[in-house]
Image (cartoon, rainbow, N blue to C red):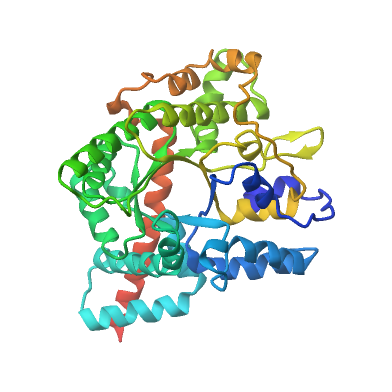
Length: 414
């Protein structure tokens, strides 16, 4: 939260309009979807804390309740799905440590298990199962179109298609609305093909560049062909491809290679680089002969500052596109508190400014990422932003393993 908000400390909070910024975004393209980028189990706590900080508490409560409330009719919720990862699932445990400590201790006692990895996996599955249960009313009311809960395969096995496939099958068995997140490694696309062939919905995570997006489309198309040939039920199947927008611009070699070439990159240039990839990806999705799915935009930022005002180009420049915007708590808080008056028009079809694109294309990191044949599949695994993100996910996973290991130790000491 502080990472997103700190640059806006001291910015005056202005009068809030009746419709939230996200309601106005959605009205530009009602087929676009807003997803919560965290476990549903933490939304209640997030809601309480944000209302406490809001200058107009009743209005903030109304905005949040129109986004998501278990008291709404399922079709009334503006949030249409959920995406998580091990860190976000661990956050759900840390949000209510007493409850989860009791659950873990009971599971250890009942099963007599002392293996931290086994207890971690069972705890992780229970977090996912409870989150998916919260979305089942929307899943059923929408005819299995909305209400998906993304659950990520263990990021430590991102180079093992057999394990990722087996974990995807196991997670999906918990609830039919569980969508399996698989990383954009060469092996990950093989797992996506296999899961699709089984009729299991997938979310391609840690994907950053056009060649990865195309690899996912091909894997899904092949999996669908196999599924149809085998008579697999696809009524509850979906595919989304996650473009990790700001991770491409900040975790890779964009700035380093620009500096090597004497190219000065502004904040707006970096945002345009990320937006250019997503615009092209959405166009490729629409024109693909066999892929059926959507792009999903994650890792968005309140950025850039233009004329002293905070903008959100990841939303503004993509308004009007039929894609999924996924909203982590910190980003959603920044939107509602710091940019409540943003207005949107259909800017998706507007091209990246010519001089900006010309500058960016001089940087190999960007040029290769935008080019359809810029990376061979074997090169996906060593993309610097993929490696950095995968390390983050693995560290978070290990944190959850250590948490349950402490409970095993406590049980042994009793």
